[in-house]
Image 1 (cartoon, rainbow, N blue to C red):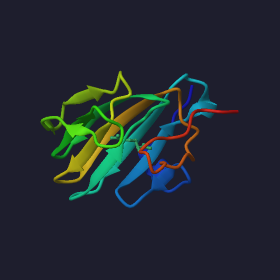
Image 2: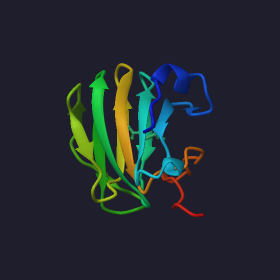
Image 3: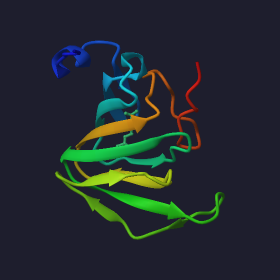
Image 4: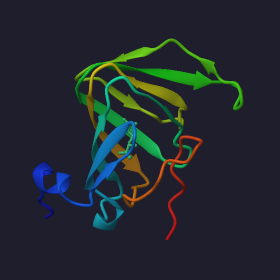
Length: 135
Ligand code: 9YT
């Protein structure tokens, strides 16, 4: 059994920071669960373009206020669909590798699950994606 606490993760290299968010890797690929699980904090006042072309992701909000804006249509000039409010208790699952903007009005705390699992050290590409899993 794997047992760990957020407090130890936050002080370790399992804590990954970017301009718009910090992500705490609760479980990564090496643990062999078949998914990775993260607590991600989205910084207030930010907008992040996300398009996980190589992963499925489910996101569950446990704190904060924000919105997700689906982007559809042309790759170069996508159309923004109406924003969907994010608040505690709200889940969204990117089952179609859905391209979107993620906006945080206040700090968002999100529990994120990725399939295939992230190793934990991937970098977001300019296209909003993480590279496909490789060995
Ligand atoms: C909420 C959301 O889309 N989180 C993305 C995951 C984050 N970039 C991470 O944990 O790597």
